[in-house]
Picture 1 (cartoon, rainbow, N blue to C red):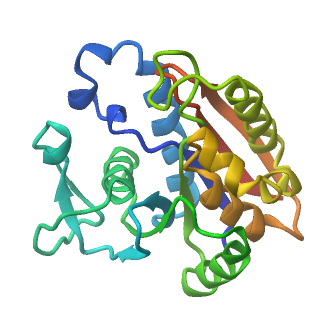
Picture 2 (picture 1 turned 180 degrees about the vertical axis):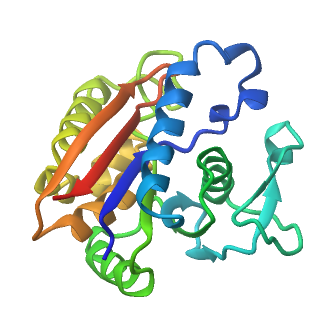
Length: 233
């Protein structure tokens, strides 16, 4: 049974060397993500992660290792202490590997889905994760809207602030219904790539009582980033 899940964003700037001049302005976000990962490692040394990536579904096994070289820093990461040959890893796997090392967890398996994966696949995905990874901690990776303000990556959209405020409220209160009803088309319009991973979490949590803590919620670079910890009661 999965008894704890943590939600983090997956921007490369979490890594101090990549953040460079933005290191100070990302310190709060980074600290929250590392703290959440530590909370996950408290209850599970093995993790299963679900995040978003390119146009295909992929599974990155614990033996994988890679590098942030493609993001400007040749920093290697591993998904376990006994890695295999280096490979090109999706960003979700790189961030998982970096957080695993920060938290001292033993290993992680990463499932990556396209951001536009239909919502009706969330329940099946959640069931498979729970069945195949009993006793693991669940790491949920995904960003909010990327349209906060005129200098944001996606260009300003007036609905972005309300959208991420609602997501923060849902993540901070374990409101599974609110997450499951997020509209895929609206999330695509707002550039919110975390929609499907959040819905996997909500599907897994349905039918049980969970407590939730919101550790961070802001849009420091025009993108909504949320960090939360969910624990099964």
